[in-house]
Length: 307
Length: 285
Image (cartoon, rainbow over all chains, first blue to last red; front, side):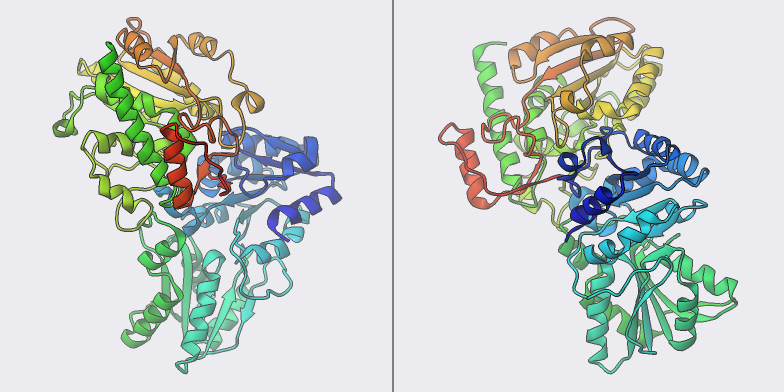
């Protein structure tokens, strides 16, 4: 089962669903032939795409819109905020090729602030699946919830059998207390491999696959902060506004202290290349992560967040 | 333009097309759109634009903005032929070793501005053209748009403004290959009657065969077509031009080919054989 098949299955069972795209059909190639007039391609016009989705939602439809994450969340930002956000319409916004997935496209296509932008919109929710299976697990609930949702599309092949999905609940892997890796999206697999490799060195870890970054699983995060010595935030996103910011906000609001080591893109776009080489060049492979985490432990170059 | 001049340009185009085809096995590229505007870009740099290697930063140079950035392989190919870019660097395509990737960026000498997000560079070109008007410079500002790109609303906002400011130093070229990423333009968001659309925005429009150097010479030499009006050239082109196995096929958008397929395509380019392609194309904007 892939995203497209799952989406089609859900759409066939609920005729309120309309699938839209701004001429980006990579993830939905067979939808046009199978959904007749409930498939709409507006051409390369992301702002119009979102406006049309809002109009459809006014007629009790559930629009699911597709485009590249960068053009959708940034070019059409004000349309998402104003037409979808203000009126709290159940439009599902699927942004593809976010983070490192944009590979060699270059900075124009790099969505590294999409989580930050989307979570800043009142009423908007944010789902960042770890891989294709995680996305498929979350899809039914995301679609049936009568709220706007941003989905950071992901077609990475799973290496971990995910548990049942629930909005606002993190998936916790392991129960180690030395280090917790908080992660979402494409870097989940790297985090998992890094966890296994660090455990071989006698370090105990847990990984939190956060799944929805808004609503975020506050209670699991606070529990993790209580139980673990060092918290790593790992994301293919700018350091501003993403997971590191979310964690910092939670800690300050709850007057908690923690040692945090954020791994993210720090005020720079990444080097355009194919996926594996991007990970290598930017230092995000499991092997790089192991080294970074060991160095962090050794040098204590940590961000201490005080309430 | 005499026969010999045409032959020289045709030879350069052939070489550029070879460079483009080779990039499909080095991380892949948007081959169809690159091949459709190859002849135009060859003509512009060889016979129209007043710009050379030593004048990249000269404020009186002509400007070319490639707004449909995904056809940058054509630009790389032309820069190699002009000896602005070392041919060996094409081997670094899509690697972290270099800055040669799927969309244009200014780290490559000769590229004026980054693009890739459609519907941006007409506005940027208008900004440059406005300043050139204020400074009464005589330079030409050229921007290449894709026909699919005309879906973006910013194109039409830009046309309104460019006409309001009577920018007759601005030349808009539409690479009219009649395809967007996945489908034919007329089957999705029809653009016709396109000439009349531009005319209604008060532009002066001419349509040419975008693969005929003779026609290009005849029409480009008339620029600006009219005083105080924006000039538009609609260049009728063929997506994938030069490769019958790719030409005008909706499913040949972004392509990654094997080394064997690349060799076969190069043979096809030289009229030796038709290629049987096994690799699937991907749909990426």
